[in-house]
Length: 111
Image 1: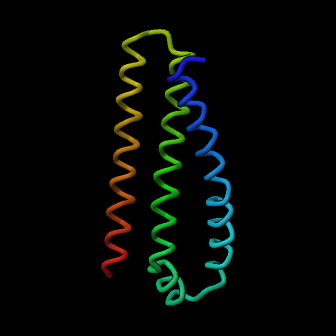
Image 2: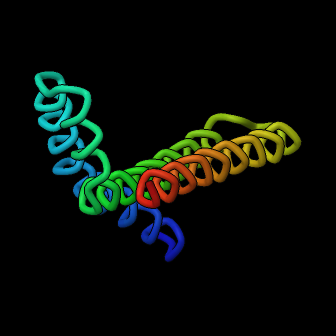
């Protein structure tokens, strides 16, 4: 296995392991939030720990997705132009979602 392939595989492995408790936490949190009043939800969503976990989840999840999509494109798309265009589209999507999530967390934490 090449060094680059090994690093990719390790990141995919460790990021998926990190996502397991984060997804579990958010599933439980969604169930808890469904039984709360609007005011309680606002207080809970404004918690610094909740916002930090949202940011960590978004970063790890989007990077995990980006790397996985890059691997699929490398393996199954044969046109170099198509690969380049798809890589650009994926990178723009990931960056834009990260910017939106980061701005949302900042706006929520300020208020």
